[in-house]
Image 1 (tube, rainbow, N blue to C red):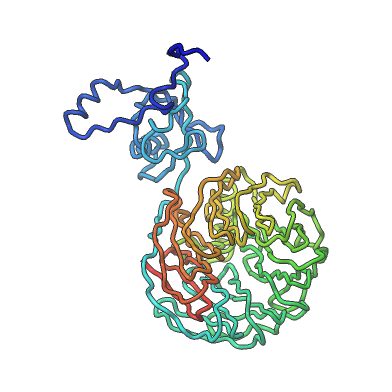
Image 2: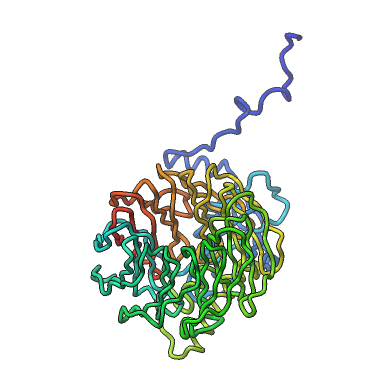
Length: 507
């Protein structure tokens, strides 16, 4: 080895091979000096709509590299001739621009036109909850599930004490205690018109209740031989009368019921082990995940099996559709507005459904989470081949949940973390770490800007999607948190725990 001095090109770039750190002036004088030294480089940009990438908006524009997101907002609003300023998020090469454009120009040529993709955000904003407004006692065993009604006015909880309880969320007092189940009540589902509640439990029976009177509607739906693992109402835009209800059970069947005549319309079999989760999609298909490692897609008009999705190496635990939120809330938006006729409400529900689908290139995307530590994305109404397989979790995946606008989804795992993914491409976007126990439940705020999680460690945590950081920790429960829900109007979060209490959290 020679002792000659290395040539310049062999030397490391700058010091130790790192690029030079950004120089930040500390005084006004230094800032003026820097301004005079640094020519304000311009580049040509072309705005494009992220939801339909071939559409260009306006002509190519010559702008400074130091442009901020606020200035980009003003630009796009004037290009789109918006009467009022609407919020947008901006992306370059799938990376969101958080403060200014200059930070995202690494390795891009000055010669080419830069494409900036924009996406409209929810106009209304949900404020993250910060405190416990009330602690509601009543259940004598663990609270296993709870849900706000689609119009945001009602709230119901079910538990291990065999009761179903309806609460007044404004006064935090119980309005009705519904008795009839003989074992733990595991599942609860509001019909999309907020006029019926379906509950199901360990004994395998399903009961329909009226939330106003607290009385049972019709007779008990009997047919399953083992406990019920999922309930799903027919989407509002397919049938605004909200008559049909689907249920899945450990007896490996799915049944569709008529809740008015209380008859079993059809029984869908094919799974060889317990059915763990169930979704009724907006295309009129039912998706069921099972411990036999498959997801089956059934047609709801004649009960025919459409296709079988195979890809998981272990039990399928959870399913989520990018349209889940609009299917759950039907025609109700965050204001809880009522419509005069069923036809008008149905039209609004269909519009809301199509809006979310349009953001995913017109697809109804399904994601499944499994005991094999992976998440798989599917386009199940069209093909049985998966879109992508997402790895990264170290333990089984307990829950996957799409944001209301369908742009993101989160996966919660027993490895104590939550991962955030892109709802179209499946690209990994971030990790939410902070829980010291398994994460059981996650729920999105209705503007898709926040996520709340409930865990075995007895806390709830609020996460900010933009900064990918924890916004707030909410301790208070004395034991594991089994269920969380965020009201559709964004005003409150409810949590139910093994400590037998329900807590309502507000701003």
